[in-house]
Length: 374
Image (cartoon, rainbow, N blue to C red; front, top):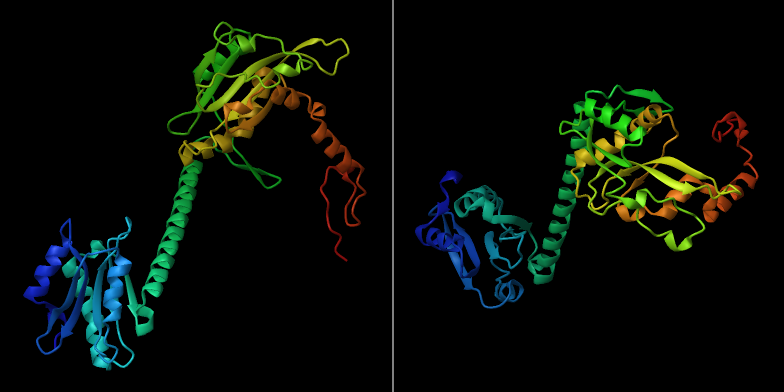
């Protein structure tokens, strides 16, 4: 017998065609194999009445456990992400030839009905495993595994994008220092010119973004004191009512934002007026930016800070922000004067006063703790 000739007979083919159409009325189709006629035949069918569990229970209640012939059951489920479920039942007492024929016919049935419509198939050998509860558990397990695979695929895709960025950035002459990778970011000509204007006091705030090809950092905009009066004000740490004031406009786009912070020195007895440069690496934490762009901002951050220190002849303080709500007066004071943050300062003092572990080397040489191997 040529297994390749086993195809649906005319009756079954007609029902399969109806089941494929939108607004399908069938809940399940029971399909058997007629080995003598080399055909797949429709043994039984059921019209939708309730949900798939209740309708399937009708099938399970009428199973003849004495019939050892393999069969196929097509079930239309109510889930959005699953269309049809195909159950291939191969009773343990079926003879080997029957099992071989059924296994070879399964692919033909899927092709005849439409493989894309069958989003899940189960192979079962025990009648008890046909219960509604066990079928439902298998569906849930398969869906969970499918979601895990999709998550892994998304992570792999993100990793691939990050690797593409690393190769795309033309200026990423990688050097190793202490095991860390460093990128030498480039500023385009306009960015260099606007940075000079910013240093000379023509602007109070400028923003840089990554170019479309991720090869350089480009100038994207500026703010004047007339447009942003908050940056023209000299802030006083003693005014606690102003600590929560946001410094940057809410409409600011992601990128590297550099501005002047005018204030009175809180550690000086006379409260001298000072002006410090602050840089914010603003990348929204809600992942609205593409993975490539987020990664490019991250890998170029250290190099961008070094470049700002060099261009502005000043020690630029910086931090990474996932929201502009974080850029407040108090946050900037803590950034410029860490001792003001009492919780952090006390924790640092406690760490310094803690006795060293036996395997720690003195920290004066700038080395971390090392374990002595005897």
